[in-house]
Image (cartoon, rainbow, N blue to C red; front, side, top):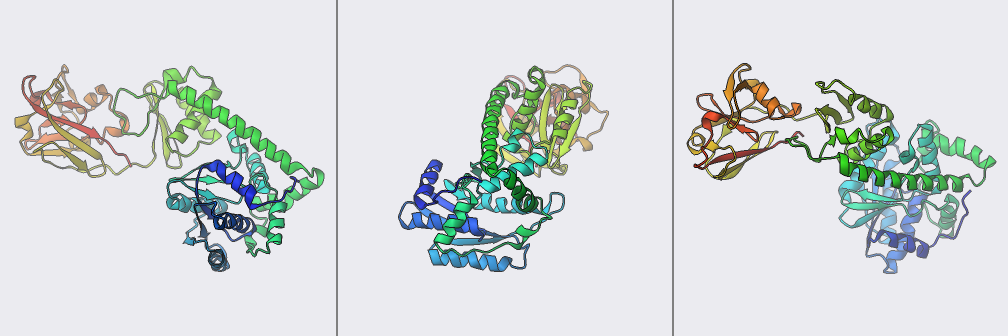
Length: 458
């Protein structure tokens, strides 16, 4: 086992200085580890070495003793003069397992509650880290997964720090005994039906009998994987600077897509690395190995195809020479509405983004002032005659709406959402953000109205 040492408030203070924070919030379950961590922080706070200190307890409602645990945490806070906030959450385990669902609910509260520059402290220790490594190893995790629990990361407006990750549980138990601390025991921790509990009660004890120093060895493995993960991140950042580019057309998305001609020059390993970090940068869920393979297959689809892969709430799809990440579920298709142009203003579309109207006099195609003063309406493709052709300013020929949308490189997921501006006679005046029809375009010497569109898909 990892070498036990004398756990003290001074040692913890040295760890907390690494965060650069002065305000701290302890995640308090009421169990041994978090009670010890709160007691250490309380000592520092009373010595004036922490600017502020509070605790958050999450009541998952999964045990008949949950209310008792909450009461215990509140009592500890009162005894030690530390404010304790209790939050009750609903845990839905369908599709992801009870453990993962409880964790997701817990971190959602943390993300919502943490203040800017505040640091959340969690009491995970060396045995917890070893269990996490083994758990992920048995599930076939990659190097990033085998880096297990990070010592620190951002959460909401604040940050998270695990100061006890390299501390053996024996040292924590000795501290609790020395200071005569009282904690609660979660009976579910003894149920070996849960994977992590099985590792804790069945696997690790057997391994420790054979290899007494295995916790320290597994901690080193985590450190090695963490170092490799940092290198992979640096490589991904360098590659993304070349392959993640702004396309020459409206996408309706935050962030830029991957430009495939540059992307395909990378090795397969670096392509997968880029996709993982690209999705992470866009705040989309991580792809599994299967999804990564499916995304790679997309790149070999025929040129006129628009293949797509979905998981969670994200969809990755190819369009021409670009790879996009989009919400799997988008807003309902918008409905027709009236558009009033009087002065320079903005017009919010129901579930479809924003129109920005400006009166200008330049060479950009724009609507005649006289045409703009008429009664105008916004409709969408489903309300426009499929075979009707019209001319567009500064373009040759007459084409159907479908052909013009293709010529202006309107991405497929926006084609049904482009605001089409028509007059009272049902004549098409403009497609917001893309073109003005030739019949209603202002001449070079006269002022006109420009209408830009900022789409919103979710």
